[in-house]
Amino acid sequence: MLTFSPSGLRNFASDCLDVVLSRACVHCNLPGALVCVDCASLIPRTAQQREFHHELWFGAPYETTVREMINAHKDHGARALTPDLGLLLARAVWSAAVASSKTRPVVLVPIPAHRSSLRKRGRNTVTELGHRAAREVSQRGMACFVAPILFREMETKRNAGRSIRERRDIAGTFGVRARGAVPSRVIVIDDIVTTGATVNEGIRALMQNGISVDAIACVASTPLPE
Image (cartoon, rainbow, N blue to C red; front, side, top):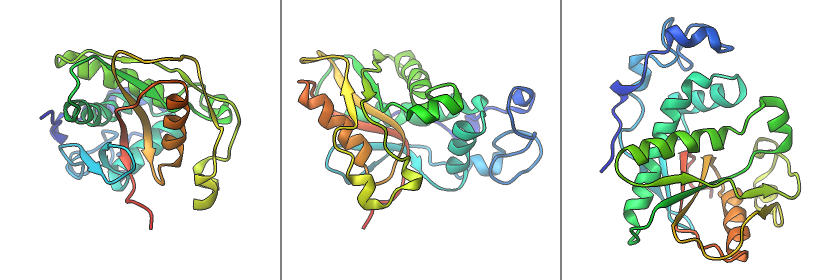
């Protein structure tokens, strides 16, 4: 089992000049590292599985420290958090891949960002984290690559601005840049999974193009909605 100890979280105090944040913990505001030792200790050490239509593994619950880390990374340019969020994604990917009976290389397919988010942030954070996770998994002996073959054919509201019903009604959102069977374990990746509507639509688009999906892996997940 692949685990990542909270004690392995890096001290980012020296990196903060490159981040649009003060020199303080993103969760408790303690001066110093972007994630202090106490807040790092709140992060689970192993990936967890969530009941879902498809096999779904996540690095940590979307709460406390991890929630603030993701928000700082996505919306406040805290790229110094990429290594640690990438580690959380990597352990979810590892768990999903190990659970599969296949022994082929792993291909990570990121959920693409909204065009408005790309314009605002200047980068696709999920793809960025995917590359970091692929590196971590590959370094531990499992071939892993990122294939950004999904793209948005239509724009939808971001999840934060949608009701649960609207989140589930996103048919036709994604197109696929590839077609046919892929000789690999295909894992769809995202930063956060809430209702699961977005990843479900991504999987539907892939399967319509002949690409079988083995699992979903994400940095963090909320509890299953009622």
